[in-house]
Length: 485
Image: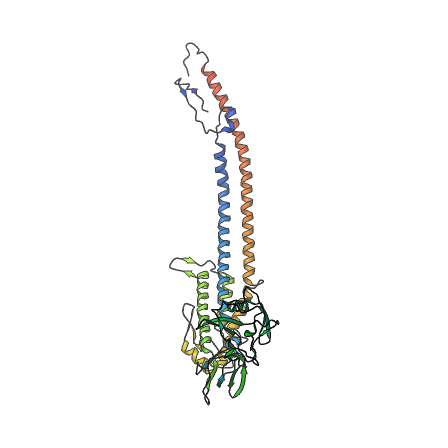
């Protein structure tokens, strides 16, 4: 609230300035100070520098945590490329080839014996197939009810034929859906002259997997469907159950399946046809150098990606005048040094020729990346495969050493975990500082509000008194002959 006064010289009324309008002192005659605004500005002025410091420190820690995550991810990705090179078994990849795919195809696993083998196939494994005699009708005519027992090899199962499925179609459906059926499929075939046939097919090859069908009740209604090799009944054998007959390098053998995995260690043959009498097909087992070369190439590419991460985290971009978030980091420098020491080391491979990455065609570029000369690598593998294997997968091999170093760095008690814990602790401490600052500023705001509210009340009271006195003096009678002064 504003008050008026009389100018002692001019006798005119003047209006004093009201500093603010705030309800905190309205009862005392009007507010002089805007307490809320003043306290807010004072608290903000006190809080701002401390808050900025905490914010900057928090941002720096957050950036370091994010950078550490990037480093961990890059190391893990690079380490995954080492699994194809860091053990002797990784260099045991073998390949198998055939001279005649119409006779057999082949695959080889690690450890398969390298060599060339003559293969003959005189007979393929077959599954039995039986065709019944003809039945009048289209498969829906009633045949009879009863119980059938079917077997395939040593496994048997029972089919109950009731009045709802006593037709050829119903019996076929019952066989196919029977519990315990090991692999007999029943199919109804339509013939000419309003006839139908039941075809029983085995899914299992081999001479032992023959089909039998017997009627196990005494009605005899289903006797036309029974079969055994000794008593075939009305059935005709369309395909005989038989084993495959073959030889590898002159050693004859049989197999109930056309897939043979136990004849030559680590080699699987899939028989597809037979050889003419007196002839053979050739199986060739050799080291799969193409896969190894691909794995080495993937290793080089993976390292170049890692090198890019090292550069972005710890390098300096002069074009943008920007330093990497981990520039000067002892952790980053240590890990990068370990990786490069392994890459450029000389390994005891038993060969003075092939004992370093450079000797097998992996060269360092000026920007810190690697490049691969595929011709040099291929020649090294062909010349001294054992030395190249040892260069990567030996006890002190490049891939082995790198894998050990990275595993340690990424372990729960490694250097990265230790640094991560330190950063987490710093982030927690900064969060606590921020919370404490907020509490301190709240307390300061409450204290200043109380102080300035009291002052506001006092000033408002003085303002009221001043206005009263001014008004009182203005109403005093003038002394005659004495001018206003």
